[in-house]
Image (cartoon, rainbow, N blue to C red; front, side, top):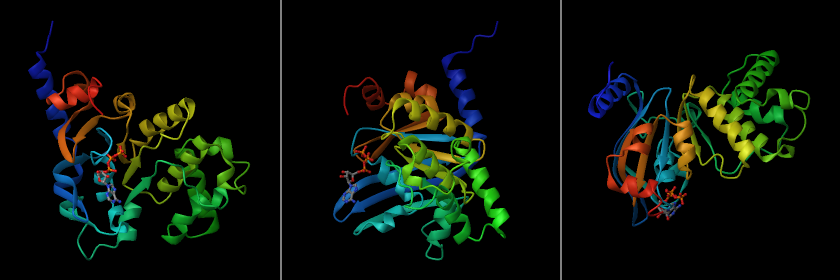
Length: 271
Ligand SMILES: Nc1ncnc2c1ncn2[C@@H]1O[C@H](COP(=O)(O)OP(=O)(O)OP(=O)(O)O)[C@@H](O)[C@H]1O
């Protein structure tokens, strides 16, 4: 019988994870809102075709870090980022980077479903059209269909593509936003508490979807729910007061974390 010691199991896990290529790398990332520092020298790797969950108490900097990955912080007045973030080895803050292009490669799904006030079809077709990803109307129809399929929404909407996206239920709207993100063939999808406005059934559907999307995309998700982090992610990063406390295999993080602060947070002792 082969009984592995805890240390051997951890070593094996680490070896396995180290074999997964790095998609995005954050090095010494600090973020300031005016004079206020929100992140302190964060070093965090995002691995390919992996779901990485960002957890930690309110205000610890999860969303701030998430937004550095596709430069959404650029849109906030007075926000300054130092350190470096790379995507496939390229600095995303390099002045020569086209930010629109970057956000197509690193897409985002927000907390509150925010479909455009347009038809279901147009919500999904808009991105591929502006990025020139479809050569003909037939091409575009296919992109729309495939994106809605990947978002697990096609069967529910295929007969009402010309109806308004805002007429869908909250859960359907969020899956429509996921279809919209997927439509431009991103490499990374950032999700900022994507289920916080959804009921348990819609949440379960989105979580199932995250599982499926991992085959084709790299996903980073901010969540307040530790159960959700445990269910959907393979890696978890714990933030506290703007610091990255620990980044680890999700199972290990929730059973035997390295840092006492993670243990305390998981046990509900703060936050
Ligand atoms: N636009 C902003 N202007 C000024 N300060 C900000 C801004 N956005 C965030 N902050 C501050 O930066 C810190 C980190 O906030 P952030 O939203 O990243 O935390 P979070 O962990 O995602 O929190 P929550 O779980 O409550 O969403 C907080 O102190 C917050 O008040």
